[in-house]
Length: 231
Image 1 (cartoon, rainbow, N blue to C red):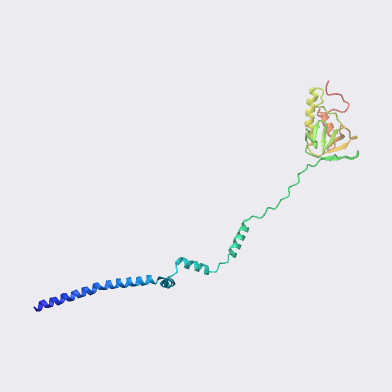
Image 2 (cartoon, rainbow, N blue to C red; image 1 turned 45 degrees about the horizontal axis):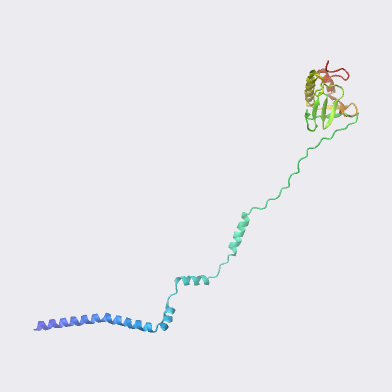
């Protein structure tokens, strides 16, 4: 009997503990529900309180911080960039004046008195279609500094106006020989009359010997009045 009574007491104690433990969650749920109903009924007055204690969004903080910071002065950077650009731009090209065209100097004919001896020296060539400065026309005629000179103490064979082929052949030989003699060095010219359409008559010599006489001795010229080249 005593054991049976003891068992009944223990079972009743367990039942009471179970019943008390199961009632606590329902009490919490009921309190939350009542609080929610109260908040819903008084939402207009509760909302400003919650908004005042709510943390500010991260984006809003960033914007406010950016606004609060003072704007940095971009003046030095802009100046540096302008100076850098100015250093990169090459200086303007300095205009160079164009050179004046070189005008060839025209030779002025030299006029000398009958008693004057002229020393001459130049690089001679054959006379062509252009301006005659220093050139040989035939075995007895040449230009010196633009003046036409006729060797006065000879009669030279013709080339263009030759009367026969023999005269023409001697004329070419005399022309070549006179060119070589004049280019061999300086020579002297002595007036032998007044200049005319045929040219200025001169006696040409080197080292005291007449070049005209030298051509006669070589068979490339004749003395004045000695006859014709063709038979």
